[in-house]
Image (cartoon, rainbow, N blue to C red; front, side):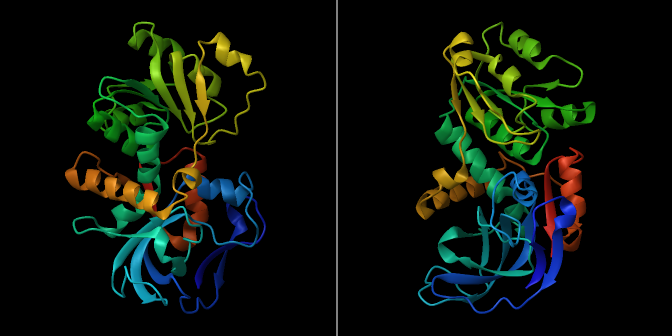
Length: 322
């Protein structure tokens, strides 16, 4: 294997280049040669210790590549197939072994970079919009970090469902970008009080659901954006982890609901993951969701890519190239 290894959690420099043989696939496994690798905040959380992972480990949770060998018992894939996956750590490598049941075929009409960029974010958007809260036409949502890779995919998909989409972003440039990716209105949270603006945009009612991958900086304000009995979906910690020391605050703000979903729970069964992945590819092929890949870094420069993502310097999806 030529790729990156984290021997001790820490900053981006904790990822060290390593060369070691990959070996042959075991029963039920595939051996892949990556064509593209997706970058996500979960990679940072695992690398810096926010999410506990036993060291040493190969970071990265999303990729697309070509099957170069199959293990015993594998019937759904063969050498030469184009496949993609997400939610399985070990992506920051030129080649890897992976369970076949966690992979899906990349359909014709979807290139490998798009597949790598959309798998984790797209399947996350699927469970957020269809299962965590069954979004319907006419619902109003608030989606934080709407110009990011996750935000762009989810906001377009929500708009395709028929929802009214309010987004937030941290610069004038990102505000304009988010408007082109499904948002009906975008709030620059660095210049405006996003709570007051959401109330204004909804005639004082509030939104039906807030999707918040930012975390600590936006959590309490997000609660104030909800209608009575609205749902707060906290799915990330980009600004730090969230704590609710007093559950009574949910009663005081209107009998609110709060959830912290994860793909590990929603996709514990491989068949559920494949349903989500199929839906993702279908909505991408339809043109309703366009995947913006706005930065590419060589795999060896993953530390630089991590710094850019942590510093909120990126928009859309970021790809690492082996």
